[in-house]
Length: 178
Image 1: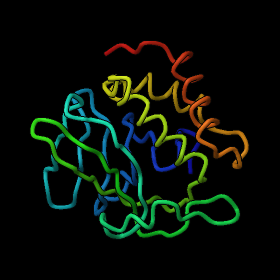
Image 2: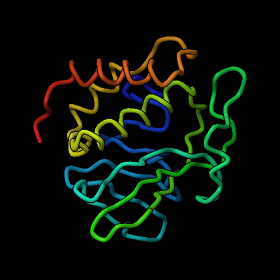
Image 3: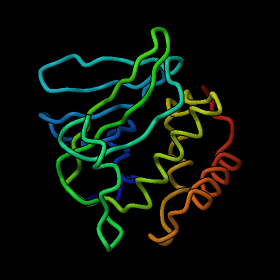
Image 4: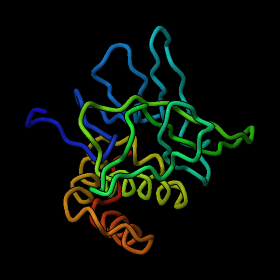
């Protein structure tokens, strides 16, 4: 890990772009935050784009090899790390047409702290619930949000503490430029 790498769980800034999953491997699945929406990258494919306007409530992260394995949602070690190395899924409900969808991502070699993964999920949920997911397409805004959510103890995992952390970031990160 170099000094130019910034991350929050599986969300990482690499090459000037924010992505969920390991965007450095050519054979990996990962999800890029673009100004126009979420872009799923897959090996041997141009991928697909989900516009921000299609995102609805229900956005969440799960861990495991298969998207339907929702029992993997809470796999964490006693040391406060995400357990398992099979990758993960970003689940969401979309509108027009209404459908459940999931985007696959491959995990980095580094382990993820549980608190960081849960803070990321809480941030995504809050932005979607507030009708502001487009802020994720602003790399500078995401950088400020990530800086405000990283660090701290790996033990404050209540819904209240996650909500407080995200609300604090939303108040200080500003309105974004997009």
